[in-house]
Amino acid sequence: VALTIGLNLILSLTKSALARWAAYCDTTSWTSMHKVFTDKLLSMDYIDIENPDTQQKFSEIRQHQNGMGFGLRRLLIAYDRIIAGLVQIALSVSLAMSLFTLRVPPASPLSYLDSPLAMMLFAIALLCSIVVAPYLSMVGGKIWGRASHDNNVANRLFHFYFYQLTRDAHRAKDIRIYGQQPLIERGASWGNQIGHWLEYARYDARFSAASTAVSYLSNGMVYLYVALKALAGAFGVGGIVQYVGAITQFGSGFATTLTNVGMLVNNNVFLDKAFAFLDTPNLMQQGALHVDRRRGATYTIEFRNVSFRYPGTDTYALKNLNLTLDTGRRMAVVGMNGSGKTTMIKLLCRLYDPTEGTITLNGIDIRQYDYDAYLALFSIVFQDFRLLPLTLGQNVAASAEVDVDRARRVLWQSGLGPRLENMPRGLETPLYREMEDDGIEVSGGEAQKTALARALYRDAPFVVLDEPTAALDPIAEYEIYSRFDEIVGDKTAVYISHRLSSCRFCDDIAVFHEGELVQRGSHEALLTDERGKYYELWNAQAQYYATETA
Ligand code: ADP
Image 1 (cartoon, rainbow, N blue to C red):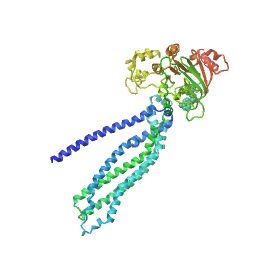
Image 2: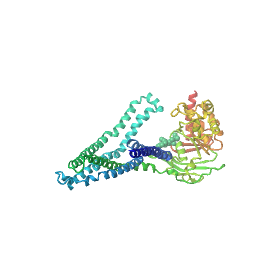
Image 3: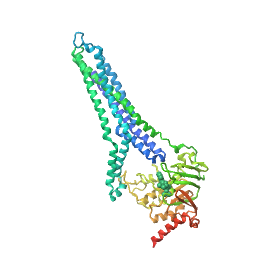
Image 4: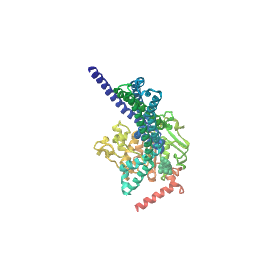
């Protein structure tokens, strides 16, 4: 008794300890798997992140993982179960062996149970139970691999319309004002139809039902064989319990092993997708040249015959651009909406590479420089910049560590100083309420000032401001212009705007029209060409302001 109790105690303690360890490994494997994908998404080329195909692929991977557990994690789960299954098979075989060695007494009318034919029938029944039934279930499950694309499109639509749009506070205003609710419901039900979920589930269920039927029938035959052998006197009634138990264990061990091997086979198509995604090459990251960042280093950036088409489009967003930017210069870029101004900046910071032509830094193709080192040359405020729901200081520093004095200085420079003084927690104040209850909602203008401060904090030799004052009130806008030189200091500045009056302070103005650089010069020089685009734009805006004042 003591031995039994002792052994049981040791075994159950070991089991609990191992189970705890397994649970821990399971949780960490879950997080590390997510980290693999998060790292990939965060380091992927911008062009790939923007590509709808990438979004589609990733959401497919996520769906397989969360929906049916297919993908990277299935490997861990399946191997774990296969090992358990194999151990179960070995133990049950050792317990069941004597079923065949103990023979029915020859005088018994049931002695045919030991004949080769009976043994063969027994083996067939057993095989049906352990091979055919799991096989049928695997065939049914295969449909989900084939359905994966449809399901994914459907899930994305459904998720977007039902969960994202309905909760999106930024879109909620327009949805209400324009009564777009039925439109959204229509989108969600559209997603449902594309999914054909019911059809796929029916297919799977048919095979599942066949598998269960085969399994019950064949198990019944196996049990009958064991019971008949006991009845014929080959072993006692206790033997029935032993053999039925062992055969059940054998069947379930075998089924577990086979089902999981099947799962691994079915999982390959999902693994292919996951690895194809993780192996997407980072074409931007291939250069290795060092960028000289010593004090006093000078930089000349040159666009040479650069043309660019966005992926999947036929028209050129930029055509044959030739342009030079020298250290310390200030250039304003003006032009109508869609004339290619922002595209030029995106090429400059290598969010895309030119379709034709090259961009050089100090005479060397920018693709040859180490990408991170090259990017560090630029402080850019994009028109559609985004702040994060973190503290004001972390937003400005773009890092968890904040140099408080520097952050305060640039916030004052960008015009957010007085607001900063009013914030209850200063630089520690969280922006937005998405993550923190005491976060503050900033206005468009305040966000723009924060983004400008972030650019100044970075202290890069090139400052690029794309419509930096679009959301500012006229006084704030005036302040920024009048202190522009002081703010930018000795850096090279590119200043984009479609408000021409705000570019007058620049002695070098580049005029873009339909993807081309059509004019370049000072405000006064450009105005002398009465047939030029600048003259046209200037007069259109001057007229507008004149009417306004009148
Ligand atoms: P601007 O900054 O002068 O207003 P852009 O450089 O943003 O103009 O756009 C130039 C052209 O490129 C426009 O016709 C615009 O529709 C197109 N475009 C901009 N971004 C993309 C994109 N991500 N994909 C496809 N076309 C784009």
